[in-house]
Image 1 (cartoon, rainbow, N blue to C red):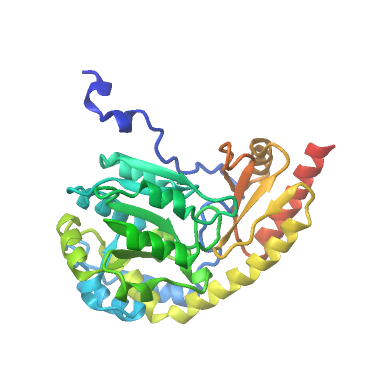
Image 2: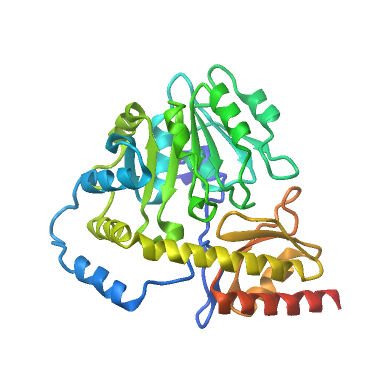
Length: 359
């Protein structure tokens, strides 16, 4: 048996997404855009008590009907406009599997969340990438130039964008929605930290879908995402969604998030405060150029080799995201906003590393 002959060429030739392998010992994780604040012990105890009531021999509620209703109210939309998934990744996969009719293919700006391309390729879709403008906004002229009668079925846009952290121009997004023959997916994974959302545009455009997630707001371990859009589109996506895709523990955690949403909202505000402090601290380091962010991370460039910076940071137990991919992201990195102590330690070590490289 020759594996290469059995696996799709596009899958065999790609490297796939590699999750970080953390070294043992005391480390600071600033690479995965997680919430740095855990639940307070009294709330954690309440959540564990609820999880203890689960009948583990029974399947979870198929389709999560109660959660759909509650989150529809939370997002201000109708119940039949919401579908849940195991994080946004599963929902992206469902989209890529479903929309392969007469209109097909995927269009994405770059740099962007890498899973758009990986999942699209893995599901047999043609992918076309269009570089962002120098200010990281959408190059609408180039993107509209790629749009044809039968292409693409899906356009993926992050709002704010990952990894650059900025909000694309709303006018440019709407121009793409109007011209696209397929569906435009706006991924709002970091919207809680931006103070902005395009959910109101759902009333205006039938071909708009919004993705949401709880992963960045303190529920990363539960892997819960949301897809919001036209009810007729949701009905088709529901045919592809696996029947018991959201486990019982995740459903309980999601209900818990709604019950104590103000607690999570206060954590978001704390992250926004720490983001401003971290940005100013990065600005003060010679050789580092941070870019304004509306997310829970900061994208920055270095005058030195970011591979060497990454190795030195990792050796000190600090993990960030190394994005050194020429030509657009040469010597660029992304750091998650941590808590006060984590940010201070990161800045201290980064200054030391930069000083050594410049000596």
